[in-house]
Length: 454
Image (cartoon, rainbow, N blue to C red):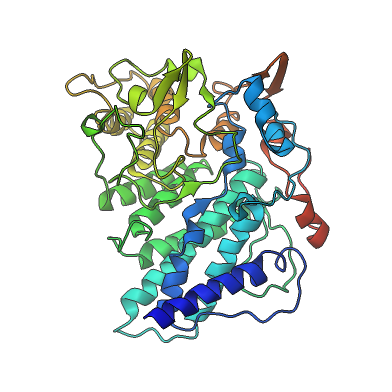
């Protein structure tokens, strides 16, 4: 067993250092990859620590869920981080330091490891005795690949519009482990279609119960599929995917059982989380030192337990304290799935069912016997309430910036972002090109793929 683990760790180290960090999407040197050859090797690879991070940190740093003082702004190590905060970024540099901070590159490392595993599986015969492990490994690889594709599309592409998706630029759809194949940007339609195909297949292959908290199940695959469809404005399929996920996994945490006096009250083994993944955020831009805007903090009612579990007060301002899997939870969870289902019901279905799904969630977030179920007289009113609660519940999940991108398409919800730093005021109007981050220039230099307009 020790020999086997050593082999896999050696493979991971060699592959990540030699096979991914420079050669693919950069200097395509002719190297020999060490690849796993057994199901146990692939199993360990697909549940390695590299899949514990999501690369949407720049989106989180650019949203409107926090504010910084001039001193905090000036103390940031990287000028890139300051530009993210003020929507003045003109180039996505190579940051160095923590490997997972390279959002484009790290995502493609994850994708490449998934492709290595999927290729390796084609050389192993699926039998009655290994079918369970074989299917779980394949489903896991498809899940992680689709997750990385979606993160890249959310960060580096326009918001999905069915009318223009075939013309809008997507991402390079790396589906093979060959590092020497030509690289080009697919269109947005093909990008999202690949994500959907991967997740649909993963949902069939994955088991209903997880071996551990770093193993994904089919409930998590359906949840990510619901997120994907929501960000395509495909509300019917998003609703069906959310319902499929909730049929398998629907248990909520009771916030009244948490200790609000603890320094990190939500640092726990939550029943709601599908998989433990952290949101990798640029240093200092969205940490516990950044203040929560008053307009957001004041939306929480006094009996809402999130007001004390999520926040602490310092110098009269709210600071984030609610820790879910380190600082920011990146993976899907039952609360998000319920909110997706509720929103879709409000848009295309039954407003009362929409409010019922929302109230099921909120009942677990208030002090015992204090929650009064919310009602709505119209679908529009229900949608207004659900979108407000979505922002409050899913704080620090790396979703707000993408939500702003989609809601800006509707004049009722369009919002101009404002960031005041010292005596300077920065703004980001709705539907501005800066909602799409530039692809790192060193990637453009090596591959000559098309850059996003600024």
